[in-house]
Length: 124
Image 1 (cartoon, helix red, strand yellow):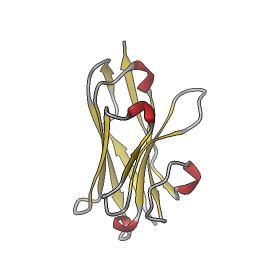
Image 2: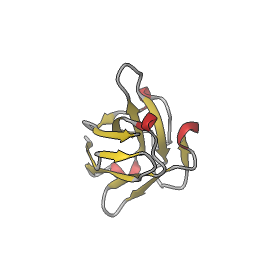
Image 3: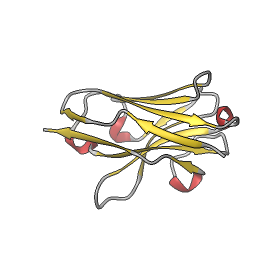
């Protein structure tokens, strides 16, 4: 069993930066691939970024490439999402997710555990 708790979401002005954190509990966290997803009102949940269990491979949605960076710290059981150059379209609830497969994936169905989400609001 893996439990995930996100933090770091807040209101920020366009052009600003935020770092989201995801604290994971569970002995097997280090073997899981991790992902960040987001969901805006009236829209489907979409993958923002993913990272393999070793952290050597990452993937990003086209709309965040060059602006967002996913990373993980095995020693601390943490996953991060550094978000720069934020735009109002980035406003959403951001979720951390864990996949037993260990391989990064972009489909929500590939992930087995989810956090409760953290709200990010970008003002224009």
